[in-house]
Image (cartoon, rainbow, N blue to C red):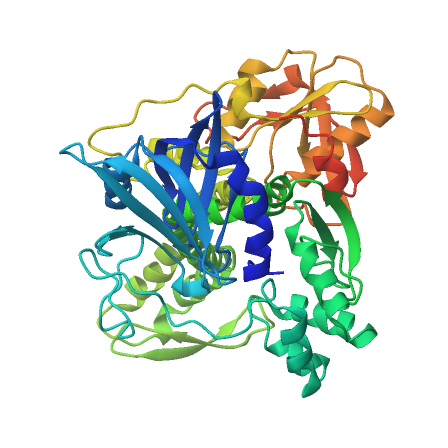
Length: 562
């Protein structure tokens, strides 16, 4: 279900006790549409994520580690100036609409007490975060500044008067009395009545209709509404395996229960973890993915062109034959001829038409064919080398894209650094301090036997893991002939079950993660070598064994320990 008004009501039951009266100690904007507010309360740090993402507008307390960017955007600088160190006095939802006001108390530069409101509007592509002065009602700044030509309903710029967006009128279900219910119910059926209740998305409205069709009474209606005063959550799946989250367990929808959680915040954090990671990775890797797309396009065209040249070179015998036949029949070729037909003694003396350059003598025309033949034959080795280089570069960018597909937001900086070192991206004038790769950067798994498996998430990590971190007797895994992570089983001895489980992990962290049959090679790490001058992540190995596996996401990720 979406972040509708009733879901927000449920979520606030959990959020409010945790952060109200907390002091706002840190504010940062890790991604374009996302803010993280860190509150200090009862000697603990609590992170509140606010997202104005058009596709997934949301807020909740998160335990995820989200990197703080080196440079703060203007809006964050404004928030820090006005809100850092302030106390969160209250959180108010506007009725059952998707507007949440965080009310702060702080002192201005003169030491006077000021009341500030950070308003979160969760309205799809119109979602926004707006800071305004509660007393004057004037906007101080906002996450998305909107040009007046784009929104004529209200002005969304600093110093403008804050106005509410247009809201759909309806009934607040938490305030309906039994008398009001009966008055509304007399002239309506369950569908009509449910359509008048505010704060419901399609799923909630359908569930309410189910309750009222079973029993069109005030008691049934209050039973439905009371479910939004709880603090837990349920994850359910649709018939086509789409995951949805509810603050209650619906009975009238065609959904299958996946899990339950007593804390709606924790459930949301896990529910959005994968999706938000993918979204954040996309935002951080946009420049890299444009580069990969352009390079992929150029290299593909280059390979097609080179292969045509190679085909022409390998089929160049015809030029030699034409030169020989001209040489053998020079007396029949007259100066100034544009074409001549001569018997081809390589083909039972059938006539062979040979084009001529009218400006050249017969002998020079023959020599021209021999020169062209020699040039093409001599080019075969060079063209093959160029095809191989272009294909290697194509494979390299394939490996970078696979790393992005498996990356977490903090991994993108290393991928960017790698492409800068390779000369594909321009280095900044003030280069960032390089972060040393450690085991903390890797994905870590514990298989059934208790042994540890380490997984590189990009080419720099792959090189470090295989060539520096791993013991020579550890077992190295990689999908066969497909881009993927280097995977190390930290053991010199492995059972068949160890090999199977580790191979599944290697298959999952590869381009073939969605395939049913994935061939994975494995060999002792000491047999893996990196050729001189090879690109990051590229190695060669000998003496390997292979196993075919089918990677299954839930089974693989259940073994993850970091």
